[in-house]
Image (spheres, rainbow, N blue to C red):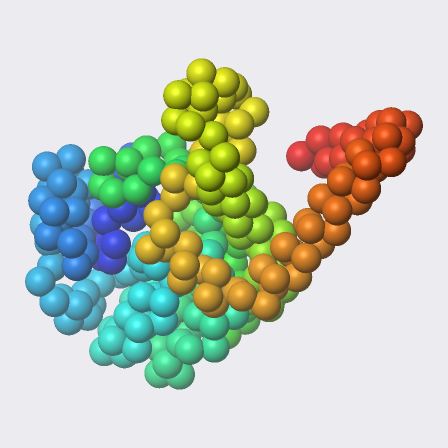
Length: 276
């Protein structure tokens, strides 16, 4: 099997490490605009060789797009030459714009996907062999994907130990805004508000587990997250508005010194852990 991975950071690199463990006779070829990423990926044995041009992936069995969402849209338009047997899987965190922009001639080649996993780290050195194991992957609008492509995608991610869910792209983006994208907005906001008020020494001395947990994803790459926020802007605005209403309610309770109401509000939030 020949696999091309476009984007050799955390997601692409981790996928390379994982598939090497479950498939024999693989050739993994990498492509990245960052020359340093290519060198690191070769040194870490994430890839067997690097491609200089996308046309080299023409007859590959599988192409993974592990790049920012705007770049996915652009790259799909540059992959219209692939063979009918090629499967293209994108790892974009938003889906509606990507699905809408897939060129018609390769629509059946593409299985729009979103692996619900990651860390705040990036680059080839961040790759983790077990990143995908036990996590969820969402397939979107696969009724327009080819049967061969869907079967291959299911086979690969099942063998990686992932749980597969299916959603409409529009539905996915709304849910992702609340569960994934808004938490990043909150984390960035928290980091900036603390940096504006506290000196670095106080942050180092007093920052405990709670602050570290909530601010961790504020270390995520702005290059990736600006694109995500741009593509899913309307849904994220809805999610932020919903969050602000809850925060305003908390402020109102504190101002009223209504501790019973505060307790009930916190207790209601505890119910989330009955689901997770």
